[in-house]
Image 1 (cartoon, rainbow, N blue to C red):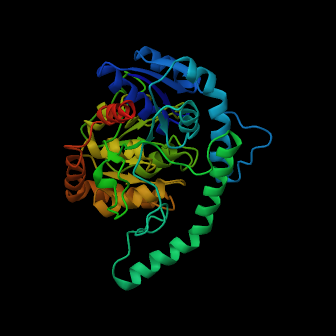
Image 2: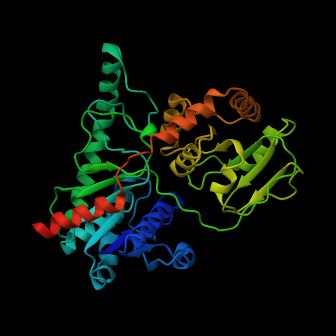
Length: 387
């Protein structure tokens, strides 16, 4: 099966796409990854064919202050930009990241079935949940249901506006205004981070986190036998700024060792009880007693899969939503707004209370028996061929 996998450059979206490509290769399929050149060398080293995802650069007419316009108009533009390269590879299936909707539009324009990859829980609006991003637990009783209904009504105008913008963008590239949606949705998360809903889409399958390490190197651990705190600053633009420096200040004198895992340049003049740099996070998690991170889905899922509790310091985007879900599940404490004193207290709480590690292990156990994303893709193609 020839598969085009389309994802933007953000690590939270590019890494799951790379992980899916590797799963496809293991199954004997032929994926081609359309993404930013930032990840070309790493993907090629892993044996993945790559193409540049054209159309990512902002245009003069783009309004980045309008999220709907940014997503939908740029998606239509990307679909036009990648159409020649996509058609040249003759894909039988397209897998498009949920934020890189241009891949799905391009597949529609080619008449090729496509699958949406969500590297996080399902974020579609629901008739029974508070709006995604609120961080709220679904309301209980009459008051709770009324609260959720009011919140949904308050966001309904924005949702409708986004749907109109998507329809207009589709019409601009010759597609029907009404979006039929993907043939299947890969929800690459842990069931422990999902919220039950009565309107779960029939074509959505939870396939577990799709994780990939951008390096084979191991980060050296600080000497000693004190508990290890792994700090992983957010890779998202919406993350809390300089979490590395803040964590070092907070944990000074706490009787712990600190390993800061980061893609960017590590801080200078580290204390002897800390180390920092690029290293395999799965290896660090084998030694970690607790993780401090921004609450992005990739780190959160990786941490819980390892059975390690986490203290989240969420920024914007979906980090607030995810952090609150982890808190309700019992595997996390939440720090917002950030202060060194609060972070220090929450790390000490998690280290002292075994229930957080037990909850993380319970979250990891929910990954058993999930759908295989490759098999989901094969079933989509089989149905398309049968029709």
